Length: 152
Image 1 (tube, one colour):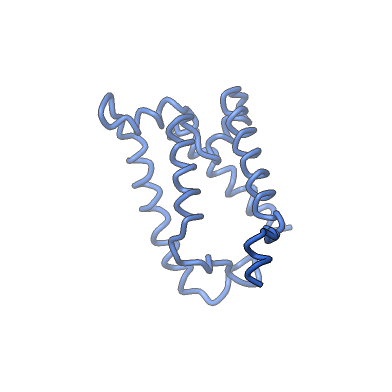
Image 2: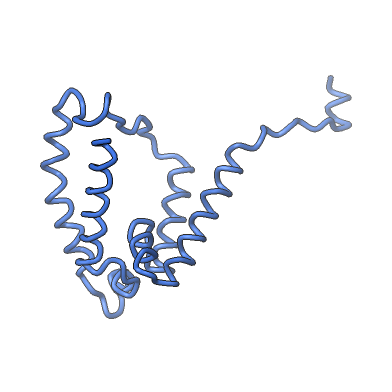
């Protein structure tokens, strides 16, 4: 029960931070990405503030032997840069640049009743479903061709 309350409280705090910083408004994000036009540095300030807040806590937590509300830490195990990571990063960046939303702020904006965010959430949810279906597909069955019959 404490894990659920903690997750809800931290999620609510994150949502409030997104609203206060203006990051649920796509025009702010697009203005940050417009480096050749009317560039708006507010998102950079938000990012620096988030890193300055998170980094000391992260370093402290990494020294702990176990988390407070879970049996074990769940650190990422994969450390290679592969095509899946690059493709996902590119898709995320293009979607972020075109829509002005990333998943967290989009969910907060949906809760606030923004129709454009709803379309984004439907789109990224559909993309997640399609990716999981593609990932779960059976391995390709080798086709029998005339040359494979001749070769052996």
